[in-house]
Image 1 (cartoon, rainbow, N blue to C red):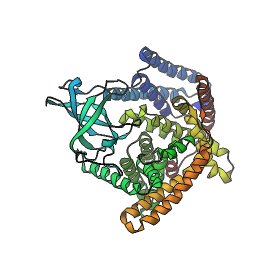
Image 2 (cartoon, rainbow, N blue to C red):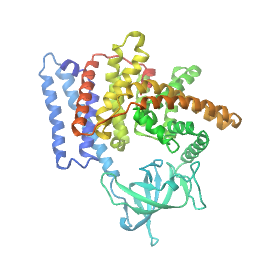
Image 3 (tube, helix red, strand yellow):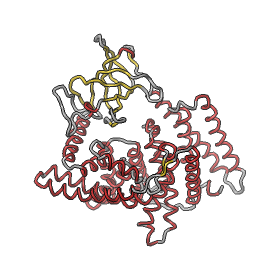
Image 4 (cartoon, helix red, strand yellow):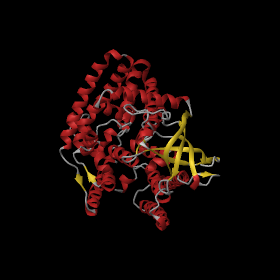
Length: 514
């Protein structure tokens, strides 16, 4: 076991300690006085591990132990910086106007409004200025979330009713002045401003932000006329689920396919592979790689920088950079580096469930999935066997997180992912092309819609069939603990077994595994 343990990249330990420090010192308020104990436990683990390994036979002390300690401490520094940044973002807004009497806020939105519960939308942004009812105004500093009524957030959406006082389109990159009141401050969530109305038209931080918002609006208007097929395609392209049928969303959830609806590395890898294939035939491998990265960055910009998309984009850039430098690095190390980079540039992502599920799934695929794929016969290894191995690995790696956060498990997701994901990918690619043709040539709209509906019905029937097998509810703490322990043991057993396999992936393979 010691021999296998030494083969683990030290960067992995940096990521582990960074996350440990982040949650021990950062946004989690539940640890309280246990935080010093958590820090002491982490350092004790590093020292005990280094001492135990250094005393084992035939162990190169000069190589591994100093690197382990160095990378562990580096991870602690990254985690501390990320925690400090996150806590700073969640401080109350600073201004000359007392927070209690603020009734007007001018904010630069950094995210698009997304549904928050059943009766509101929420968006994040940076405060530029505040004012009160007496006309006093002051510059301000801080990051807040605004809670928007649906009639304001969706004022320009297809099917919505707009009045004369309807504000301009509200989207990421817009600068809006809103009236309302601050909610009671909560350290875990930061400041939230409940919006009652919007003053005047919005302005835009950059022309690109306005172009993006207008493009997303134009796309939603085209797909709105496609009915249920358009609602699913809009969710896959732009993460907008406003027109997705509730029964369809519930079917995806029950079938263990929620990751298909959530924009993730699967969608980004598909964009990268298609772009690389098209550009590679015209300009060669280097041009294909560059065009793939640009296409992936454009997709993230258009769809919105969700934690899983950011993770996949960072991994793609790292893979391309290492390939250009003729450096061969295993996928687990790239995952760990991506985690460290994302913690530094977007520390708030680490507090979301999507971040945890994304990294757990890709790490499971990179370790458990590769090992399982090797056990299949050669005739199945690169097809069905690889898909089954990746699906099982992702399920087993994310099971503890799902069990704790959602109190349910969906074993059928192993099979449903293999059956539905290829069809959903085809629907995404074909639907995007059909939408572009429909926007460019209105005369062929009906044939485009007909083809999209055939693909949608195929997906809908597959999802409905798998959804007949209900998820396993975890109603007691004992059931949750058992699910976590069993899945974790499985994951670690396959992980340490997979360390023996030092397979090298090409750049194309890394795109497919994002």
